[in-house]
Length: 265
Image (cartoon, rainbow, N blue to C red; front, side):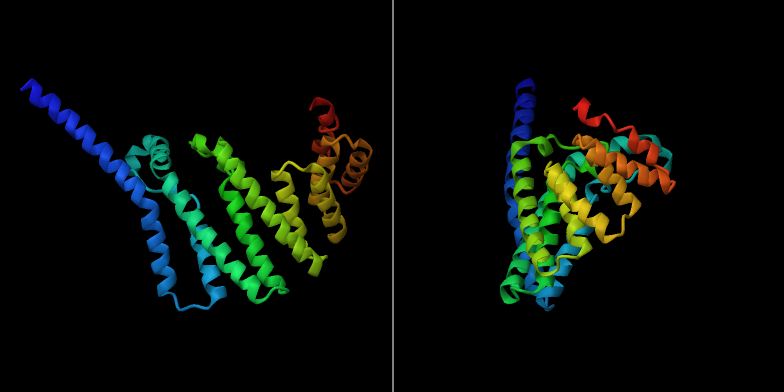
């Protein structure tokens, strides 16, 4: 009986891992087939397909948090269940979003080839690359309250994927800038991308451009002043502090607290 019990345990364990590895290996193929069938069944125009792909990827945002719901009287266990939900499903959701975004990028490239000088086509492609870059970032940058994040987000592979997607997004935004130099959205996206790429000098240039476009919007000035102090350009930072103080901006005093930010780096 002991021998049969041990054999049954080992056989069950072996079968479980064989089936687990099999289904994990098959899953990307199933995702590809699912997307292929969706695109095949769609009769929409190319631009509408592109929009629906982006919307699908957007709707999957945070889906890994919501797979399991406990009754109200088990509310104290909800954080633990949410962690379990993220741990078991984040990879699948990540892969599906990645697949959708790469498909959106492919459709956008075809749109650019058909209309190479159309700003709208380059905007769609740059937006898809921006969404892809966000996918490879640590989710806590956008939502610090996330209960659990996979260590894979700190891996070299994820960092390289983010870098490539962000750089391609910048390249597309630069093309749009050539055709529409005064477009606010372009410079706002460039500023955020340069921040994520840790290129403060270029981020400052974009915020200076945004400040001119918006006639010195106070929130933009605050971010610009913060960057000046962080980069040791204190005289420029003080000018912005003066302007915000004069305008009675609620965060003017918070800005001056960063005066020695460069010295502490």
